[in-house]
Length: 112
Length: 111
Image 1 (tube, helix red, strand yellow):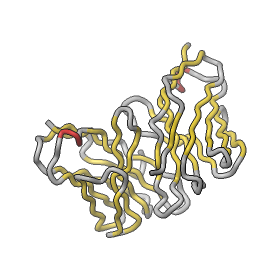
Image 2 (spheres, one colour):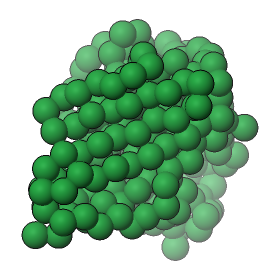
Image 3 (cartoon, rainbow over the protein chains, first blue to last red):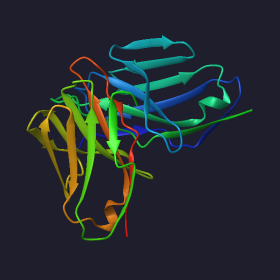
Image 4 (cartoon, each protein chain N blue to C red):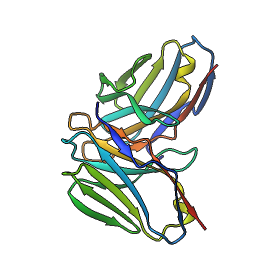
């Protein structure tokens, strides 16, 4: 069974700090990786995706991928209280239909 | 979210009754998915569709069936609801070259 594991939370960081969220996956053939943010009582929203090894930056967010280590991370710079949410790592299966397997999520709290 | 609508948004039903949840999209995307979300388990795939009348099982398909008779609609049916199916259900859609995005969710309570 394909598995996606996220670092256990909850994670608390002070406002302005860097939040680091980590994810490992078991399917070595996976090619596409996603980070979703989910506020309490809301649906997940896509914030980052990455397909190639290395770093991808978008504003305050940086996704990092290391396929050899089967590891994906999300860094949030200059964390804001509005970043407080659950972050879900998702991995697209190496098969058909673009199925996503999700980790159980890491709850982040940014303290003012 | 724009382009995808789930109905109903909330439902309370009794054990043993049939329940159908609807997902409607206006994006003409090929792929549609049903997930359930429970505390401690994240999102788990129930069923998915890769075209009209083309569906397959996901990780937690027991007790659920689906149908997709047209591109825009994907129905999830609980033939005989049980308390273990109390959950939040999310529909998601994606295209061949677009990332998946989610509907607003349906909160189902089976009493």
